Amino acid sequence: MRLAPSLACAALAAVALTGCRGTAQATRGAGSEDLSNLTPASHYYPLGLGSRWSYRVTDRDEPVVIELVDRQGDFHVDRSGQKLASDEVGIHDGRRYLLQNPVRTGTSWRNVVSATATEHYRILSAKAPCEVSAGSFDDCARVESRQRVDDAVTLVNTMTFARGVGLVRVEVVAETPSGKVPQSTLELSDFDLKTDAASMD
Image (tube, rainbow, N blue to C red; front, side, top):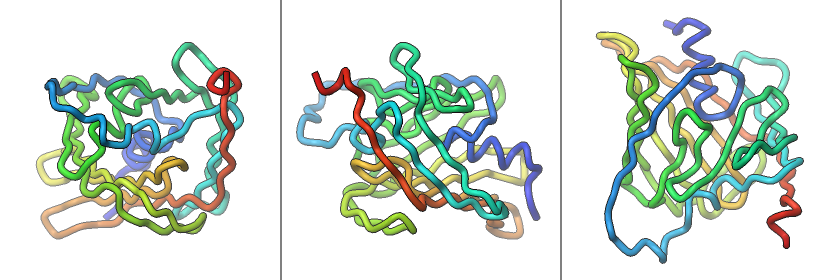
């Protein structure tokens, strides 16, 4: 069983700026806990003009390439017009938070993507090693996103972010009454990171 292409596209767009659009509103937690000893979410997705990430995607011959080519306010913008930014809450695309502070196992949040759909996020692990085609990394955070498609199907995205690199892997699975059905996998194969001139001042 495969979900419709539009749903698969939406799943990957949520984590890799691959071109599906929508609107979302993230809920934010509150509290006075001292989190100064934890690594900020922004370190797991460094943004700079000219930065480029290339991904291998299942069922696609050509790689998906994300390159940041413009700035619009707080957002970095890729060639397709998709946006990405970081703030005190975490990393977001203006529609949903992909990674949220504090970056530690168990942190959870939700993104309201429509009047009838909500994505539920949870950090499965943090500060753990990971390995993809682009290399091995010592400090990675794995995030699970779950969205109920209908009464029988839940779409599950498992995203891995490497500190100092960005998004390195996405696995999309549909949970159905008959079991888990793989939908798509995206894996970092190459990257070239740049630093904004403004951030070097």
